[in-house]
Image (cartoon, rainbow over all chains, first blue to last red; front, side, top):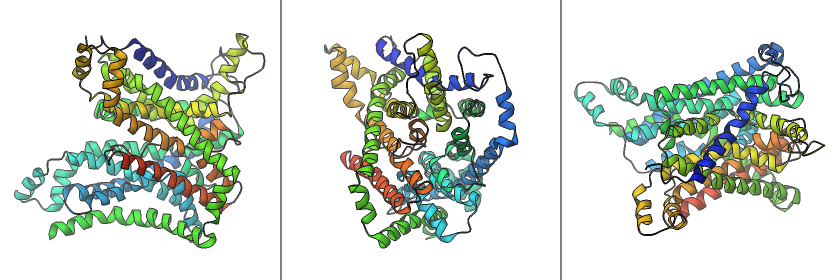
Length: 264
Length: 278
């Protein structure tokens, strides 16, 4: 009965769209195992030589991965501190201009990343002395802060503030209330937001392509540079590994916080 | 009084960080651009057919992408909101999964399929539909296809959020009062899902307007959109003034969309802004 009214047309569209979404990913995985330089169908055999290429220092992919992880982790950690404090400010207290303050904390959301990149590039060239890591890190930290703030705020909106009062009345100091009651309770939501923010940083291209330096190249930028010179299945091998990583994260999120939170 | 001090202390870290790393640079570079050349760079952009063509290409690609994403995404979202089968779980995973995969990787997948020696051309030649390879890559069609692949999930998620909140009994009531499926859709479901449609369209449109990866990889060097042009002006043409003009005009265009929608809906929009690189 529940499915009785679901239109056949909608079902066909759903199946076709799912195939459309998965097709390029399946093609990539398949391409990563072809022995030939050009991906052909049917495949002329099976080879893992492109995977060896990924880990060879000459392709710099591992170096790029390391740089991406560095930026992603530091930006996310810094933004968790900034984001949690900012979110507590606009949810725990009631004051005039609260909405405006929240809008300010999430304002980078409304600025195209390429615009932010250009502006920061100009600033860095005026001031000077910033390493490639610092340039990319500052850009990413600004870009992903709104995601952390949004997630924290939505968790804190459903937070029971009387728990803090209870802890305080039992003699806990304000710092103890924060570290022993509030933070542990909102941790799942904060972690979910942080994972998404980290992934955003990890995949960021538009801003990074302007701010990275020849000595500091993140993995997605390295992939794009490699593509311009060599179009061989090494790219497919790297991509397959990244797809596997995404799959692992999906499974982990499904097991811990559930995937339905994305549908709200 | 202590509470007020606590609130200020909590606002300070993010407040100062954003002021120094975001707000001040945005204002400073704008003021500097205006102080150096006045409005000439902006007027130059708005009167040069070359740049106007880039602006128009960006708007056109974004409009087509948004319209197609809505047309394709709506039935899918409707099915997802109404079905309770195990397929729903599969759909959630398939929709979220590409979400977590870099736009570079996904564009690369399309390059393998659409290239001159790509799988599609191999197939077309094998079955004899064409003797010479068809040019799929570096076309506007390829860019729109790649963009749809990235952005349809955003549209579906925005629509599902609203569609699954519509009481099924409302539709059943319309049926019992004699409405046919088309009337039911036009008079009941569609109006009730308008907020989701608006959310999804604004999201997809702004993400298309600012997209960089897809036009660069699937459009090639001669296909220019606003974001790719900023990078090209900086890295290839070394024309900082032009890059500044394009950057701020793109910003104004995005803000304009947000303001218009916010005013039109009395600020009821839930999901303004946001989304990853396209």
